[in-house]
Image (cartoon, rainbow, N blue to C red):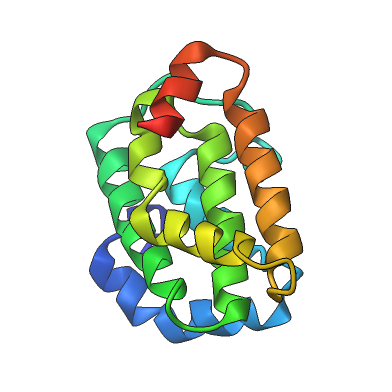
Length: 153
């Protein structure tokens, strides 16, 4: 099987879940496997890195991959602080390159709930990360009113 023939389905993510969860154990270092997983949704650059530019649009296949990936990431919010931290970083990566009309797929209830919980107490273990994520979120959408509107709706 050629790697380019593998499709990012919910079943595939479920089958490699133990590997992906193990990749979260090195937090705060984010394992490179996540770049390749996200690269299935949003194409990697010629240097096999994630783009830093927001995309204008995505195909229906990429949208399907995005939904599958977000469903998987949402599961990380209920496991542990370590996994929540990885999930937060992955969501912010997706938000920074996702086309504006797809931001609502990335900004999910588990993501918002986690941010609210983290920010509710300065003594929370992930409080600093919550501040960083909010700053990155604001920075990534403030360049246009369309992005800001998409992020808050």
